[in-house]
Every structure is written in C-alpha cells, then in structure tokens.
Length: 453
Ligand code: GDP
Image (tube, rainbow, N blue to C red; front, side, top):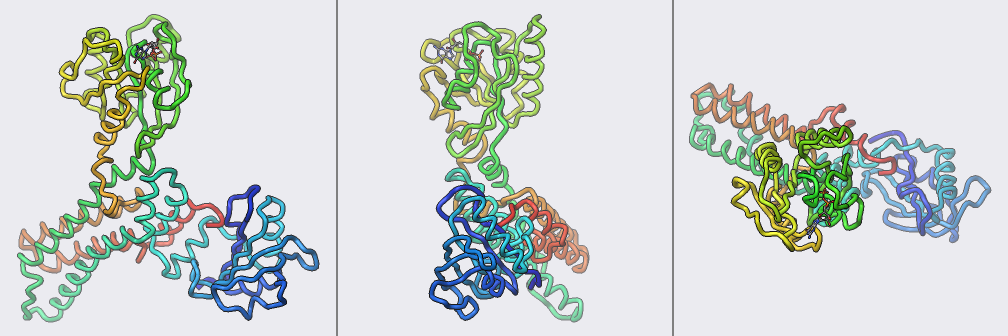
C-alpha cells in the first residue's frame, strides 16, 4: 500500500456535461470530506463503499459547484485503495478549482498512470491488463477495441499462466529431484518432460505468430503508393482517404514531393504516402521527389504499386517491379474502366488487384488483399494477442529459453542444466505479466499513461 494520497482530473479537460476528480489513497476519505459537503448532511467517512452522495464541491467556505461524490472502500476499488470520485460540471476552470482544493486539503498530484500503477501494485491487474487499458483508451476501431478488451479481460495473462504453470511444476520437480536423486519422477523422463516443453514452445510460438498482425491493427502500417507519373497514384490516395488531398492532373509528374495521410482500410490503419512518380527525369525539382520516392520504398512496410492498365509495361515499370519484388507489395492494375492490356501474369507472382481509382471499383478487393498480406484476416479474435513490443520481447526470451531446455534434455545434459533454462523461461514470463518485473520495467510501462489514468 502507498502512503501518499493522490488526486487528478480523470476526464478529458474541456467543456462537457461531467468532469471527474479522482482521489485515491489512505487519506482519500478525509481529504474528500474537506472539499465536499452533502446536502443531506451525511459524512463521507460514515458511508459504506459503492455509495453516492449529492451535494457541493467546496474550497473552505467557498462553494465551487454542485457535485456527486462516489465512495469506494479498499480493497473494492480500481486502485484497491480508498477512493473517492467527485463529479462536477466539466469546465476547465471549475474542475481545476476542485483539484486545487483537493491538493490544498492534503492530496498530492498524481503522476502519469499512477492510479493504474497502484491497481497493479495492489494486485488488481497485471502488466498485460494495464497495457490493455492504455490500448482500450486509444482504440479507434472495432479491431483495436477487440484486441484491447481481450487484454484487459486477462486473455494474455490466462494464456501465459497456462505455460507458466507447467514450467513452475517442472521447476518444483527438478528442485525435489535435487534433494531426492534416487526418486523416480515420471514427469522428468525425457519423453514426458520433452512433450511438456514442446507444448510450451508451441503456445509461445502461437502467441508470437499473431503479434505482427495485431501490431498492424493497433498501430497501423507505413504504406507507400508508388508508380510512374500519371498511373493514378494520387487518384488512388484520394479514393482511400475519401477527399481530394493529392493534386490530380493530366500532366505527368505533378506530385513532386511526398503527401502523407492516415486512412482506415477495413480493420487496418494505413499511414499513406503518395510519392512522386518513379521514372527517369532531368527536371531538378522532380528528381528530388523521385529520389524521395525511392527512399520511401526502402522505409515503407507495405507498398501499393500502381500501374496503368491502358499501356503495356515499359522499362520504368519493369525497373520498379524489380525494386519492389522482395517487399510486402500489392500490385494495383489501375484504370480498369478504360484499360485492359495488363494482367496478373505480368507481375511475376506478386499479389495483384484490378481497380479503377476513378470510379472506386475494386476497393473492396484491395482491402481484402491488404488484410491478407498483413495476416490480419487470419487473426483469431478469441486468441491472446500480445499487445506491446515489451510483451513480445519477453515472449521471445521465454521461447528461446524453453527451446534451450528441450535441446539440453534431448542432448542428455544434466537435469540441473535443463532446470537453469526453465528458470530463465519463467523469469521472462514473470516479467511479461509483471509478477516479477523490476521497477525500471514497470516505470517504463506506466510513464506512457496520461495523468488521471
Ligand atoms: P499520378 O501522377 O500517378 O498521381 O496520377 P493521377 O492520380 O494524378 O492521375 C493521372 C490521370 O489519370 C488523371 O487525369 C486521373 O483522372 C486519371 N486516372 C487516375 N485513375 C484513373 C482510373 O481509374 N480511370 C481513369 N479512367 N482515369 C484515371
């Protein structure tokens, strides 16, 4: 338990119907009593948890606003501590006045994420759930929401706990065997132990395999729209963005630098850049744009390569195909409304979609192709999907330790040597869920939160 009592505004600062000041810690009740007066004359300190009082938020003798006060008694609150939430009208000045009154009454300003950190420290949630809360707050679409709410409900923790349990049980048997070397423990024979380690390996591999697709949903993907001048890159970008952001003209080479935008395609956010057409040019300004486009190809995680289906491939097109063939690429055969001289076989096995950027035909097929190439369409919404680079890093370390344990077992090394690898795997999993994470790790997680969460 923390001995500081903290307070913060827990709703977005701005005009709104209601704004909430949250106070949590051992003195939450007594501090709230100083800044809230119930109409009924009842005292907050005499109320049970999960009750509400109506009255006024006050600063000394001054009345600030009418207010509702919600009372939570430890350990039955989000943080696990005594907590009071005071709701007033949400105006920047009003709500800051109430916060200032709480601080004058003895509360400390909460640090970013401090409420959630206290919930973690008091065993209310683990690190994967805390990170899930952060993603839930940031979720902007169905896909992001589903992944985040899975994490908050403990899906990742549950999946990890199953692996952890098997390894803890193995570590216990190894410790027992060290004391009683004559005892025969069937769970430690090569066949049984090996099968158990293999199942742990598989579960960690399954979790890791869905990470990249989950990341695409959570964070989006850097996408470059490339192709020769006039093939329809800007028109395609406008189709995806849904407005006329890029300049569309009939004069080749009009998009001279990189235009960037963010767009939702199905479940995925594309961070789009429409680049200057890639072709040989003597125009100095255009050359800068063309060079930028080339470096964008190197940096982008997804390439949408546009080709004009009204003309056969020329040398510029072929050079571009050569440049993108090993990248995550979708070939867009554009101008299907008037074209017809290009087809999928011209692109050496790269995935192709035929569209008309002008009329919008083929947009659904393009969405499906992007979801397929990024594996998003294969993501099982009911599975546990790792939610951060930190979690992935822990899972990778756990997997490599479990693999090392199985290798050691198969090579006939001592059971102690296998046990060292099992301990390493457990340490990585404990760090993942936060059971045994260092302060550095937990501070790193919670500093990404905003004040009030
Ligand atoms: P960019 O240079 O590759 O960005 O090409 P633009 O998007 O500026 O398009 C060049 C020209 O092709 C413009 O006149 C567009 O209206 C036209 N265009 C682009 N896409 C299509 C399409 O799908 N069908 C037809 N008919 N014209 C298109």
